[in-house]
Image (cartoon, rainbow, N blue to C red; front, side, top):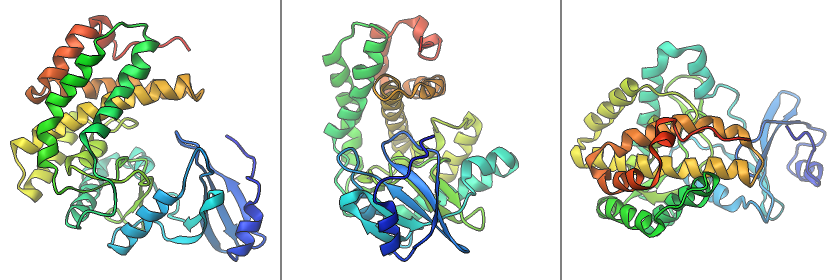
Length: 327
């Protein structure tokens, strides 16, 4: 963990009224952002450092303010200096959904239902001031698989066929996602805080919010790249969502479409984190993500993409969950 304190942080905190605060570095995520817990007496806050040019705190600020103004529990902004990448935000504490369920697995259904209730609340809101989740963006993300996983395996594949298969699969979904809802895009057990109860969710990591399909955040939650969600729990929670919304088979098909797209993208991103950013630990998650991808590919709505995998990815790699990498 990087323990260095960014240049200029003391001046920023002083101007924000936190003169003399203790600054504690926290473990990082998969981005260039860094986080610190700031303590002054009995007060605590979180400091995010998202320095340009690799990061830009403006999307986070825009999304946090919109969510807060619309009754969702994003951390409140205490101070900001976006040009230097500094944002001081409300501290949601240390009770994260992931660790809570590690300790209290018997509460899984209750906690996941509450996380879905937050998505249902978000669904009732008009779309936020965010860009539409376009077919071009879905394609750009899916291409991360052939940009990073494929060369790491020294495979020769049909790149044009990849794009054509995804267009066939996703084109019907684009029509059904209009007018769309705000999708947080990384909604899972490591980005949900439990605030004083199992039914109060604090939201994190929403700076990439777009206006898209209501199934996207649901599949992000129930097909979690970093936590095992059993097929039985996924089925129960999907049924809960369907009962609450009245959605049917078309939604289930779109759920599979977005699950496959997201999981293919994540495989590419995890290989990129190893190859480009020197973070090989993300390779350990690939077998879980690959298993989820294979389950999604089994849905008839994914037939064109499933056929591409049959023709381009060796069966032995697929059977091995993407295969082990020599790091």
